[in-house]
Length: 62
Image 1 (cartoon, rainbow, N blue to C red):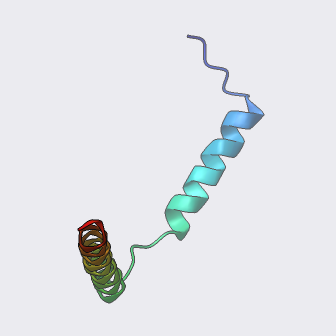
Image 2 (tube, helix red, strand yellow):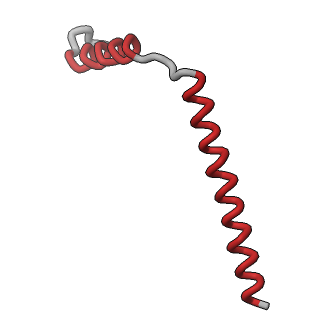
C-alpha cells in the first residue's frame, strides 16, 4: 500500500494522538480502589434485591 507523507488527515491524527498521549495520566490508586468498592457494593445490593424479589415471587405463588 502506498503511503502519502503529505496526507493532512494522517498528520492531524498523529498530532491528536501525540497530544492525547502527552496529556493523559493514570488515575490515582485511591480513585481506582473507591470505584471498585462502589461496584462491589452495587453488585451486592443487586444480588440482595434479586434474592428478595425471588423469595417474594415464590411465596406469592404458594
